[in-house]
Length: 141
Image (cartoon, rainbow, N blue to C red; front, side, top):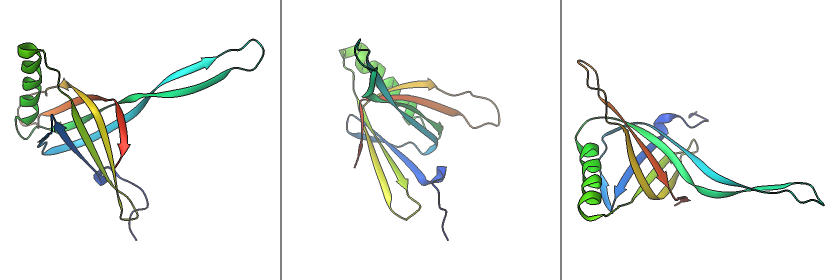
């Protein structure tokens, strides 16, 4: 019998920036959370009414640095902004192997990135990097 629950190894993450796939060799963690805007009305003649409207997704992923790919991407994003005023965007694909054997695919669009940690360089340790992201929307593909 297979595992009845999703575990961390059941997830793969692919990053595209301006349509080009970035090879992130060892993604070791991924987390995303929906953001919402709380809408509320407090009518004088009725009970309060509250609902949420979607406001994008925010998250981060961790990478064991196996190449300069991530550093090079961030440098290119900064250069594009400072040299031409261009702000690019990306897409993140999350693939989840489900316990029933199927695969769920989620697409995060309108992605902006922040290299929240370029890594800590220390003898005999793997350099771990953290990338924060904001996505306008998440779709099931």
